[in-house]
Image (tube, rainbow, N blue to C red; front, side, top):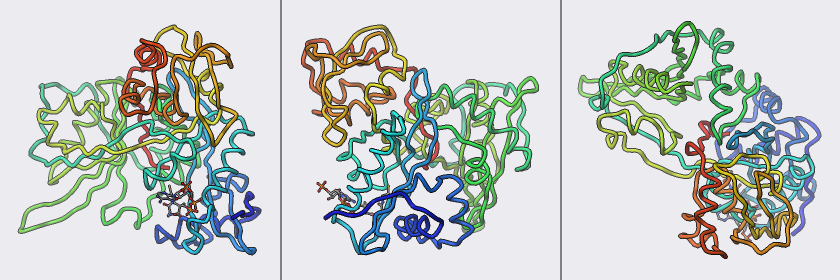
Length: 404
Ligand SMILES: CC(C)(COP(=O)(O)OP(=O)(O)OC[C@H]1O[C@@H](n2cnc3c(N)ncnc32)[C@H](O)[C@@H]1OP(=O)(O)O)[C@@H](O)C(=O)NCCC(=O)NCCS
């Protein structure tokens, strides 16, 4: 069935489109809330699908840059995707994805990225799982570090106003080296990081910001909440870490040491941590974190040539890919990657990959060899998988610390 799909023209249309997903989250679409949302998304990045003159679905995109190995690329930050339950499974999502990816292509954004409500939805549109992440729930009695150390700096509290000025530059310094992280503009910091509505706290207290200073400079920070609680006269309080980052290994260690040591809690919880998080090596009993891993960031190479040319590689080398991409046929076919630049070629391919697998390997998160073992990449010339793994590997697992 064909649906009219176009970008919205005003706040009313924007609200109807946002409500396509909002209704599943119990959202009350007040004007103030929608205006705040619109500040971050803009009308020209909200696609809506219409049926009989009414909005029946929506798909939005934030405009930001995602860090890639050795670079930073404009990205369609897909979000707010939903279809009214009255019109499900009639192709509304497919029409929206078509319009959104065509738009991204025209804008020249080489990547699209998203967090999926369900893993089953986006593969058919060319998205591949590019980064894993996981949650922890660590009981207070297991906070000990494996090796003794003296903190190298000091922690102090920041008032939100002060934090709004002090923290973004620290985040940005860390962000530019970490594949998978995305840039946050001022409005993003104000609306998403520093706004602290009571309903967002889910029973916990307000956000507390701390800065970690070394030699007079802020080298790390954390934002967390306390969720107080009592049971049989003892605390069952939770310290909920929302974000904790350090710009040096010492800063990361000391920020976490501070959080872990906070008294009068039963548990420390955090989510979205990467599987190579330093805590695994810092803690005396890392298994007590009960790390539960799942899918994190999904990536789509909107423009295979620009995406491959837009990152750096672990070593010099050449490789020819035969890319399969039925949803964005402009990517389909053979690409030669040589000295960091991708061009069209007629040469015999080394590897055959669906575009989803190329996306999974792109940020350095999932080796081609692992994809091949899962039947998601095919080695056409002996040794090509190992060569591809060495080219695409980076110094860390990609990490997106925030659901957008
Ligand atoms: C997920 C959702 C957007 C799908 O919309 P839809 O209009 O029903 O999807 P379409 O009819 O265009 O389906 C396109 C394809 O995706 C498949 N599909 C859609 N939703 C799916 C789901 N939740 N799980 C598995 N497959 C799904 C369809 O079966 C169809 O498959 P095909 O290409 O093999 O024919 C809609 O169900 C929804 O709004 N769900 C609740 C909110 C949500 O999860 N949004 C996503 C936020 S990340």
